[in-house]
Amino acid sequence: MENKKIVVGNMKMNLTASEIDNYIKEIDKYDYNEQVVFCPSYIYLPSFVGKGYRCGAQNIASYELGAYTGEVSARQVSSMKIDYTIIGHSERRNYFNETDEIIRTKITLALKENLKVILCIGETLEQRDALKTYEVLKRQLTSALKGLDKFQGIIIAYEPIWAIGTGKTPTNQDIEDTISFIKKIINDICGQELKVLYGGSVNDENITKLNTIKNVDGYLVGGACTSAERFNKIIEVVVNQ
Image (cartoon, rainbow, N blue to C red; front, top):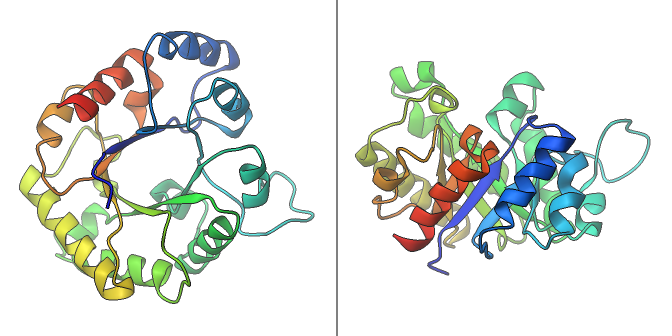
């Protein structure tokens, strides 16, 4: 498996058109490569793609095509020369009631269109306190991956829900142990190695410490990626450390 870590910036529903213009002017100063993936809102994707940046959609529809107002299909995303899509983010699961079945459907559609999938999994604070973290992660992985006919292009992003946007992160040892468990379950399901990223309040202040975890293959960054300066600091650590 390729050793290079990747850094994915999930910009969520942030930044206006003028702010995006300024953001791109800032990142144009830096030398980004295939290790960095920008995931802005759908409407801003052409601005990044046009500059040659590697990009991902924050979500895709669970339908192939048709009369689904407001949705964007895997085929449409792929046709724009976009490489990745995030699927199963906790905000999609929680706010939009996306089930394990819907997430699996989206993965199938994405792979059909040769999109690389960033599959998000993670436990709530209640599940963690009840010592059900591994049970939850195993269920999410099994539901999403079991029975697929190909796995190349799937990346797992472990994001403990209780750490997203809270400023809280698990200890390095907790992250390392959990990612080891995730990789074991993946191997049990498909007999392959897949990249596993860590996400959840990753920022320019804690990245140096997080980046010492041996089995992490990269990072999914939320709020900190909406600042070009802060995101670049994160990238520099991951790429150069």
